[in-house]
Image (tube, rainbow, N blue to C red; front, top):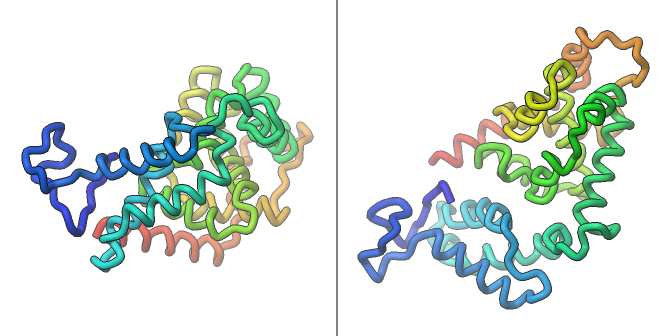
Length: 263
């Protein structure tokens, strides 16, 4: 983990490898214990690399609560929330289900089909370059974008996902919004440049991404797939889909969460 916030236990040095005081417990030890208990109680899933990226934001939010009484039970609360979330996404971590209708391969396939419907030109360009969704969307979808953005932005995205009635549909739409925001650069790029853009996504206003994703979900955005569209104007067309008031509201919420997370 890259963060440290403990209201009851303090470390002399952030994440030192050696613990000199037996009464001091580091955050990574708490997270490690949560993952260990989960793997023991769920032998069909066990521990798979990437689960630490799922538990991290959950534990951070609970352990950094301003109310000491609430924060004192961060470990138990984090495990409970992690268990609930994993009950919905555990199929992404079970290798034997990869090629089933509920596995990660199926989810990536659905995402790729949505891209084709949403933006056929971009879909064709990425496909012609032999860039498979496994090269970038695997991490986006399986880890709920937790590795793509700074922690405050991840919390903002997760807040929207967890409040949505169909969170995985919204997740796919956020991923589509990420592609559309980089559309011009992707269309003019070769294989290596496209892959670099997709695997190392730039920092962006996630409030706008979420707003764009809702536009996609509500069917208020559709890019014509015919070749008559002038790609030089694509950026302006993307920006027009944003509702001004909605974007300002979500952007303000994003800034508030960033400020709150730094305290």
